[in-house]
Image: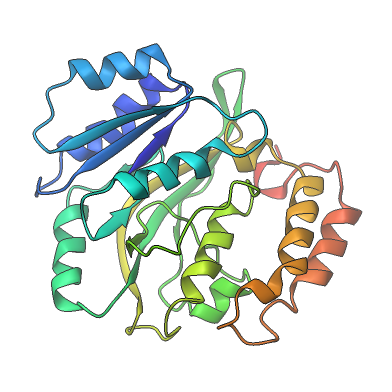
Length: 269
């Protein structure tokens, strides 16, 4: 599933290009055009795709986060028992679909599957790269679920696979922490043990280049503090997690508040 907002060219040369290179084509691609962009509509309607697909459109929300609304629409429209996400500026490696389908067959009890990403953080100014980041793999091979819960390792939804569950939904009240909040929902619905309901595999299947043009790159510490405070106040909404799971948040909120209006370190020149 891909939600996209006014980035037809990026969609074409990242997501679409990587899907056309998959070694297995037995999957369904759902594209949600957030904002009814004409160039995006033309791209999908004029491209002959060798796999099933659905094309959906929504008006761009003024207040709530359109990405979350689009993803919820995609979950409802999906015809498969499993859903996966890929943002318009990222790509799957050619073996992604084949590998994921193999894991589903090997581990039929798993409701959530998380592979690794090859990542890079680039600084972009006026459409030009100012600084190219150093590549890294995320999450690391020794990452635990506790690491992800406490933000010692970062959960990202690109390449994340889950069964379609009626009570799972993306919360449009979050932007910076929308992936993390969705991850907490997932843990609240499963046995949080690696290799059981939640399967983490140390195999790199996604290419993810994060830039200053994105939601995280354009956010500030004030945004981080506000959303994290909201999560902390709602911490009882995830009953299957231990009572201490959110203890890391108050110190982090205080730190973000102290650094308010300071550039995010990952994108400092």
